[in-house]
Length: 204
Image 1 (cartoon, rainbow, N blue to C red):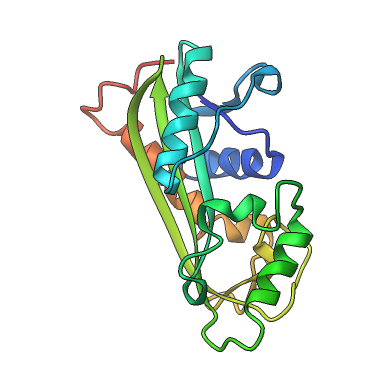
Image 2 (cartoon, helix red, strand yellow):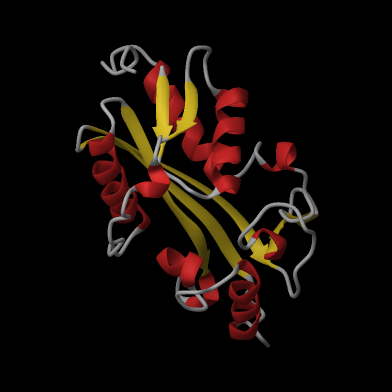
């Protein structure tokens, strides 16, 4: 069975595929939606990760007859009342880069002692415009005082994971994918499709 992914982020797609290889049953593969770059993106105006994931999944699933998933993910920082949250990718503005987002986050946390934060990923699966199910993954950590490491993407260099003793930016991908929010959401999705009684395991 093929699960089409609606993401143009190569880092995300690589992590989704790795998670599927590590966690998924034989016979389930993840592929990018063909022609995704030529499809006009929908407006992500949801107030939650779940809402935005559903918007994208139901929209992009109209462009294929198979099952399609889309995710919305980001960083929630306790001291910032959950920000950047759904605005994680554009925290520093519409043209934000990972570097400018990280710099703004550090600026907002200057002098703040409570550095708790969590990565959240919500995956929505849809087929022909109709929602099938949603899946959520989270991982708790701390926001470092400066970027560390060059691995990963987004806020990974600032996300210190105590059990590893380092940031996700310092961790290799294989190790990160054992605990990441994205891996946990993918794991929940794959278990859903491989379990008996979903009625969807034979689609594709």
